[in-house]
Length: 200
Image (cartoon, rainbow, N blue to C red; front, side, top):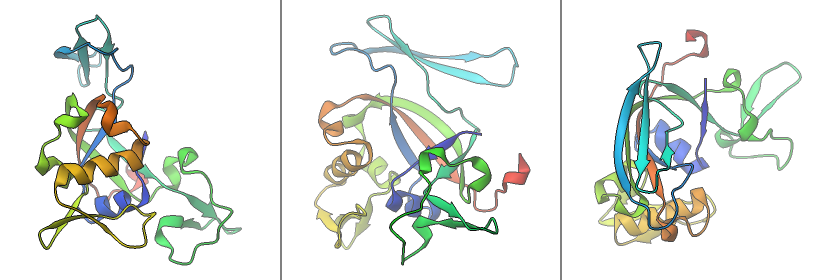
């Protein structure tokens, strides 16, 4: 089972059902000037799994990391006590500064949240539609678009969803991501509140 990482406020948005979509940068990223020629879906030898490929004008190809129907676990910082009980950093208001295990190395057996991929698309990052910004976890309140970065003590208000998402992706994927306008895989997903690892 594969895991996926979100920044803390987007884990919460997923659990609350406000975030149902995520964009991930294609790898390898085609060179500047290349355009997306077409996308193909190939049925693999097991006759159950489809492999998607994006074909670019310069001859390079890219495939998504995840597949439709695949269940992923959400990675987050955690720790174990001497009895084997698991504590999650994102679940605690009073957090000790040290001792948390890096979420990148979290095993599926320690996870508490799971999602299922329901669709895969492809586009340039800046082609995101305003309604997809909301699906990415941007929150609309009282006519303003609010985004909680996790690093801010107060929410920041943006007048437009795309402006808000541009700030969000630069926090989640690194400063300058929006301006670089990479090709991305667009994953639709559903939160699985009752999923248990024993179901594997």
